[in-house]
Length: 444
Image (cartoon, rainbow, N blue to C red; front, side, top):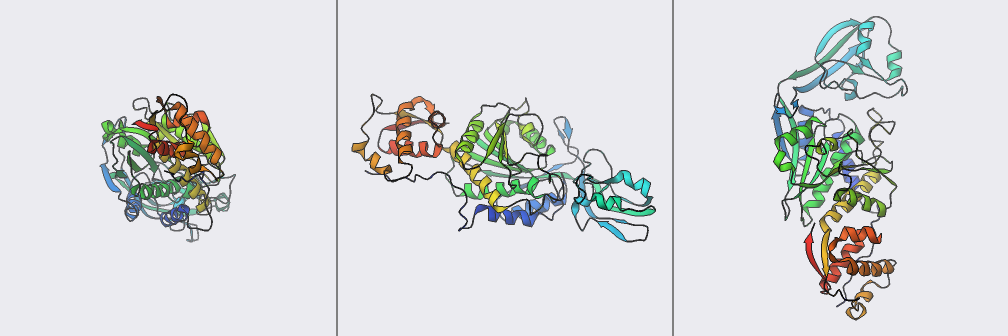
């Protein structure tokens, strides 16, 4: 029997067809105007929109709930905010851009002098045309963010300031989507949902998670998959506190963020450093057509630092493009719909799906004909892969798989040692099993 196999390597987007990134970009565009924070109606509205795409459950955790060394904070909502100059003209409005207000600002409506107002104004002197993103989550304060050019243009006099917001007992809201598999061991994909109008730092990760869920719903799944849409830091702390035993079912995990810019891909290892997810990510990056960089774990960044805290030490890495703080637009109004591009989103999506396919397909096989090489030609195996640009790669993959399938080496072990893409190794293993030359011992 001759078995036909697809010998194509992972390729970048074909511009002639609709790509996943196009659909992801539409989600980013739809969510971009919403003012989100670590709590409040902006998060709820965002999750309600996501329910149109995926089966995400919305969870509420009351203010005051103890979560390890933290406490779920008061809920913040905002309706409007503005500044009027001495002539009574509105010179800054929340309705123009939701970054104009210090996130989590307490309510205020009063007239103040310019000298009193300036300590509550935030700008970027080195980026004079951009609005900064600033927060005051755990220190009650009020303030406004503006371009530095606008700040420099303010004249002496009295200014009327108004922030129509509320900070009161409510709840922390997060989303969770669980896709059961053949085993209760889990793969975690976590993204943060707490930033206002920032396209790359927030929305790109959300859109990627949505697209991965849609893809996984159509795939046979060995693992169960848990997707979390949570506010940064306090969200992962809250989930871990309320799901401590469940957390230890997580066998692999990725924090998805900053996946829409054009920078090189960066993988931040888990705290363990050599977990299967670290190896799978490194292998995928080595064989996909994108520039990349791998960095060691450090206890700062996104929610990987909570999942990797010593009391959990979960195998969770962070896969992004340009890391936080390392691109000029980070936490500014320039992190907008122009910064995130469908092509970049497609590339990130393809990389994530490649890694998940490695996790799903990684197993240990045993050679059923271990004494010398089996005769592959009489089984039609050479003809099955002949006439293709990757014929030699597949021939070598067969030899490597047969030689190292000794009940001790996994397919990922073999792919790493042979320096052959996992896709080749896995497809070859399937074919050899069909010809009774291999037997699956266990999936990992």
